[in-house]
Amino acid sequence: MLGLPDSVWAGADKRSPADDHVAYGGFHASQDRRHLLLPTLHAVQDDIGWVSHGALNYISQRVPVSPAEAFGVATFYDLIATEQAPPRVAHVCDDIACKAAGVDRLLDDLSDRLGDAGTVVNGGMWKRSPCLGQCEKGSAAFVQVAGAQNVVLAPVSVEQVVDVLSVATPASSVAPTPRSDTTLLNIATTSLEDFRAAGGYHALAHAITIGPGGVRDHIDTSGLRGRGGAAFPAGIKWNAVAAEDGQKYVICNADESEPGTFKDRVLMEANPFGLIEALTIAGFAVGATVGYIYIRGEYPSAHSRLSAALIEARSAGFLGNDLLGSGFEFDIEVRRGAGAYICGEETALFNSIEGFRGEPRQKPPFPTQAGLFGRPTLINNVESLMNVPSIVLGGGEAFASIGTGDSKGPKLFCLSGNVVNPGVFEVPFGATTRELIDLAGGADGDIAAVLIGGAAGSFIGEDDLDVPLTFEDTRALNIGLGSGVVLVFNTETDMADIVSRIAEFFAHESCGLCVPCRVGTVRQKETLLSIRFGDGDIVGKLELLSDLDEVLREASICGLGQAASVAVQSALELGLIGVPE
Image (cartoon, rainbow, N blue to C red; front, side, top):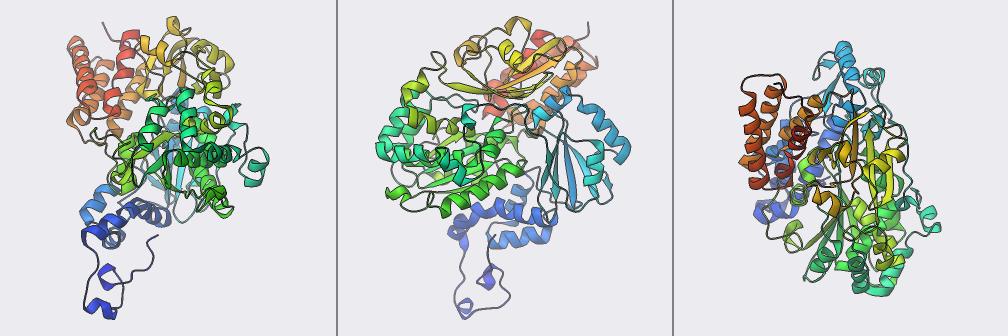
């Protein structure tokens, strides 16, 4: 990753003549190479299964940063081990979508066969894990294998986990998504030849013909809003970055970690060239020469397919210098996350790429002015970007004709939990929750509640199933669409357990930067458990949850803390927790 050291000051074994007179390094060298810190930690983790003290010290010398800083970054991520770990570690999902599908029985069986989570057996170990983005499969495991490719098993069985912990090079075993018929996958191929034959890169050619301003006009006219949760108008963001001078960056936020969300994974695995073309168009439109795809660490298949597609696109002349004879220079690098939900927040993502802990930054300045490496940066998620080629080819007005007043175009929704046919469903904005559940074959059992927007979203009951899922209609109900999660729970589900798991998720995923979130999420989790088991003054604890909700919403630095209590409060309003009399 770092190459051989060229100086004893950087770790070389032999002194060169230059080393007798001058030492290179210091602050500026550190800033130039610090962005290699996370990829280097990955390189060691992937090879030996953990980052030893010796490896960490060597990395610190080569990057260079202080050992304390390197250790602070390494310990920030769940998928980087800084204590000796076995060569095979299976992270088994115990989050809300898998719980709805009955994964607790599998977890109990694993405990019976292999001991409690964290027990080393046969040279391997299993752990409980937050959502792995395989929510339509019913259960999943992400397996880190030292010296080999990490793999995903979904759905996963007890026997598979037992086998994978004793086999040196296990293979991925992932069932296809039950349904993913979306116009964003009209071209579904990992072959560049097939992609071009089906019309791939026509949008880039047309973008070059109409120029950067023409592309931005189409994006502005389309009314496209961000599909990652914030719903910010894309046209405003693109024009703001284009107006800035100097070096600029474009980033695809593919760190899809919201429990219940898996649409971006489906898009990347099925159509990697489509995402590369879309990001290239975005770079052309705003005047950026470098792009990054920041992909979550638990998506090894998407990562490998994107990496291979980038190599093929580069060799075919669709990345690099003078694209399609336009004089436009652009290239893309894939960066892999390492198990940190907070890195889905745009400024935390910048810090992660730059080699710092993935903690959010204060705004302003906004990313359009000072983003990655302090430069103007355009950042959109996978689904948002994948709409760009069709907007460029079909025109902004055609896209805007789909949907409703403030909610333009088609939208992908992730149906999981207690539905007959979970999967990714594309509908025009304006479809209702009930209609989406019907598309998924209906509910499996009587509906107790539906979670809209994921762990950061809200529970709704039967009375709200016919509300259109648009930005404006959900806003009127004081709920958000988030990333497009529709997670159905039937009446056999222990809803108190589900709500407690959401609170536990946020307590675990808080980066700890600000006190309201660092303390508030833990106190929320503790208070919920106390209420659930009837411990002490219930009325006082409900008042405490209300106070925590206000503090989290109003005082947290970023969206994680601001949304950490939303689902809990909606569950209390619907009576899902079963508060004792």
